[in-house]
Image (cartoon, rainbow, N blue to C red; front, side, top):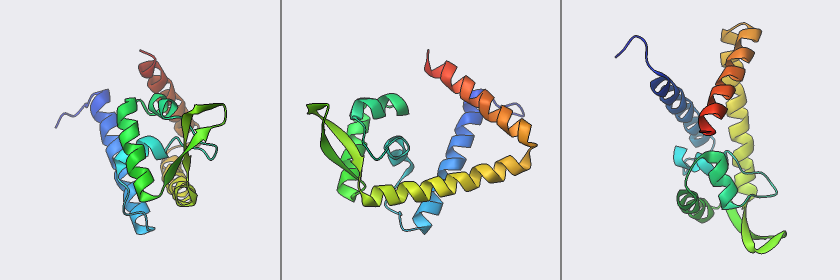
Length: 143
């Protein structure tokens, strides 16, 4: 293992560790049918719903992958497809009550993780870290 891992290795380690903690905590709370793959949809849903193309853009996944994940989440009872009132030909992916409950639990778990990490650093340093990480992420995604 290298003593100075590159950005890809560091970001992957962080992502996988956060996903593991989140999905383990969700499983303990009764959402043991979810996997990190489902996060590509669940992380971006809101109560009014989003089109699959918007979920793909937000998550950085291909629309076909998002469609497969939505199919899976629909079968598990977390989301449903509804006609988009702005364009009846389009469909919105909308969380069900179970999906909204899972989102509340996930938000609580993520908030606890963030609080734990924020306590490990001086407040300004943690805020700067998040700002810098956001800037790097946005720059990379705009390429």
